[in-house]
Length: 138
Image (spheres, rainbow, N blue to C red):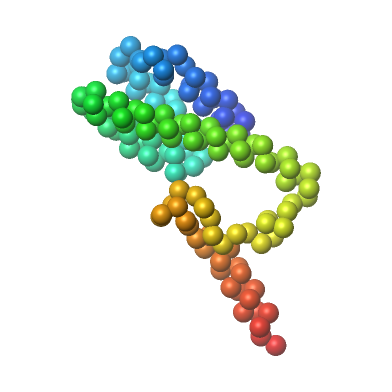
């Protein structure tokens, strides 16, 4: 599924009136979540937590447990929508400019939701180290 199509489907499901006002039954809410979950497969950072909270919501738990889990599910969907919007907005610029310097030298450090907010791009680090060592040799 293309990013535009995924974005459109996620926005459609996210803006359903029942999402704000509440679903008439647990089954209706689970049906909604079952339609959303496959759309989040493009990024495991959204898909896996969504499935975790879906398991909690699908159990016979109190509203004090289900409501926060559902809010977390909605947060995952909203973040996925924003990522898709960002990706689609940045795609035409990369095509017009013919690529940027960052594409030839990807950043080694990433500021994303990882461990303490900082991650390491191991393939980029490996390429830099490899090129550094090959330049040093005669």
